[in-house]
Length: 260
Ligand code: V07
Image (tube, rainbow, N blue to C red; front, side, top):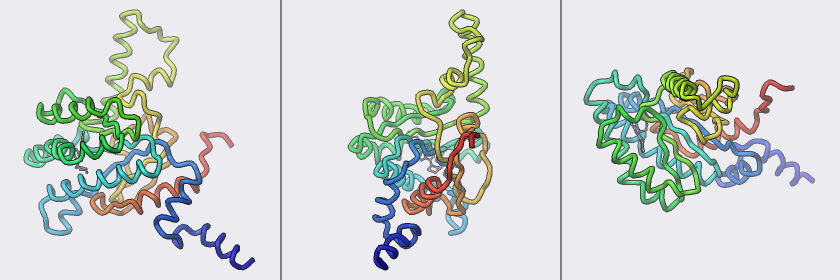
């Protein structure tokens, strides 16, 4: 009796379980199907160590690989990562140039493993403004993984949500003027299909690292019903255990969609 009670108590406090026990317990309940992450704190991580900001971005890139693997193992279906915002062009030229080389480096290093793990790579953002070398690497990865049926790894690259919404409206008006759509058929669902996240369900869980409590123009439409989880952990320090903490918090919350 006492034994059973102890086992039950242990299961109620995930912190008393080992990592693998926690993962098993987590899989007993619904895991968020789509997780979106604002990967903040890379520059600060480097500054704290008196390193150039670029080192933080580079370290953050390695974490992307680890978290993709962890999410896939936990049964997450889609992972959207905010890699570069439309605002990021305002950063120093050398930093922007460095950032724009990261997709190539990431894919050169990890694409074979991602293919091995059946991951499908996607991009959400204004592609026309990307440097040719970045776009080439990204399109190659999209093409080589398009038949994959596992985790969707969706990078928000040169992404801004207001820009995305404006573009959707422009495209919708164009289709209306061409007689392809009538204003009476514009529903939330059909509007969603004009967004860059078309084909992906809305995120169930949003994670933002590094202690900032803002959306910063990220998926404004898609996050309408999403649970938010914030942590002070800087992105380069983010590990599987933090992802598990976020998912545990998600599972503890009751989602009601405005109902009772
Ligand atoms: C970038 C590393 C992660 C922390 C946030 C800022 C720096 C992975 C990519 C990437 C993008 C597209 C793609 C494959 C990989 C990336 C940028 C910055 C611009 F198809 N990490 N990462 N892209 N950082």
